[in-house]
Image 1: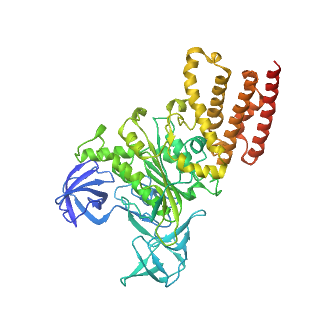
Image 2: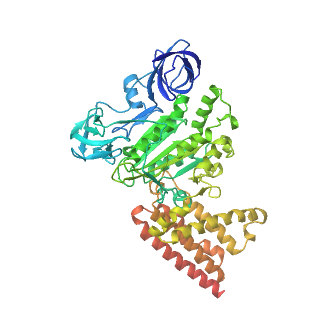
Image 3: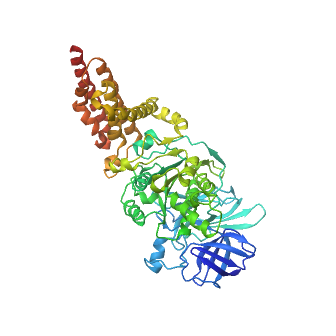
Length: 589
């Protein structure tokens, strides 16, 4: 079925003669067969957002509907893939047309020629239901791709093969309850704007270890949780998200470059193949899918890119994996919504954003969660969503930041002043929060004892005390403070510089395990406890600050991974001895 273009306004095309088309149908526009999606229908007139450059397109051009919604192709071959916002494989497009991507190019999302070794896990005669695993494919050295029965299908396996097949060949036959024989391949198609089904959603109870001390210790996120990273220009949002993508203890990472600079995606493409996953020892690309829809790519495809990414993530979640979706940034996605809304002449909301901005953001973040997957084997998977927010001028009162804060449960507020001081990660400990602390406390208590959360509380208290003491220092100077308050300021400086600050370019310090974090913080707080006791005995504050062990605590984060437990124990023993000697001298005086 086809219609005719009557209006072109940037990425918005209006066509008539499409009475039988449906909302969200994918269409092909003009002689170059540009890909688009129907946004609104009025009679036989459709408003279409085109995911490619529309220059040169004019009234009278033909519009052909495919009759299917915007969908992604799911199957072996996605890991290590680099896609644009509508799941076109960029590497394959480069091979076909060169580095300057031509309009209307059609390339399948998965390689239809490559053979994959399929090993069945069910037998002829087995009854299966939607989500059941019927076989496996070793996609990379760290990801075992599970071939599942598509959702909403069930029946009996009447034929299943073993061997090497491409993704379009039949590997099994399913006889449905109404007697139909349905051939099964290794691929599924799924509409991106519809969340994939699950059996049950659980409250997240396990933390996501990111290797970043300020995140893991002070403001943890749970597996299956949601987080926002807001901050002004130059405050390090992308660096924080790169660190999360690199070191998070998840099985799969889907990184969505949505409207940000192209050189930032280039950094990811160059770094990830060279970096080693601390859990598997393999290249990080062997568990990563990249969606690249940077600022110089079509605006409309930017809006689709976050849905493409989270649908791919849900597919891997359904296999029982822990998946992280990193969206950089949701502000650019909201700007794409605003542009399309303006061209559709919809009533604008605050700051020109559409009135449905908050509900669209909620639809995205609500697809995260820790779930029991569909199928009969009770698999558990999780999808963690982390979105950057880029408020103009760092103003967190703008609509995207406010709508995001109402939805997410972890808020890592980046601070430009910290970034300019070279304090990484530049997360402001006074403005950030995590609402998962209560649900994660049992896990921390079980794995690290009650001290971990107690020490976290003490550290936060010291940092907050420092903030109020700094106001007094500005008025009367540091020397006017009592010895106890001077100690508070010194310990707060140790927490900030020796614990929270990390060097992303130093291999030893770029990633820090939970055990190492716990020992490092305990050592700093032990120093504080011993010094308070020594001050009570009359010890000099300046003598306590200048002990040799104090400098060793500052360098503790650069101790090699295999040596830190013994090294930390030695530093603590030296510290106790040196403080005891000073306390004894203070008592004599």
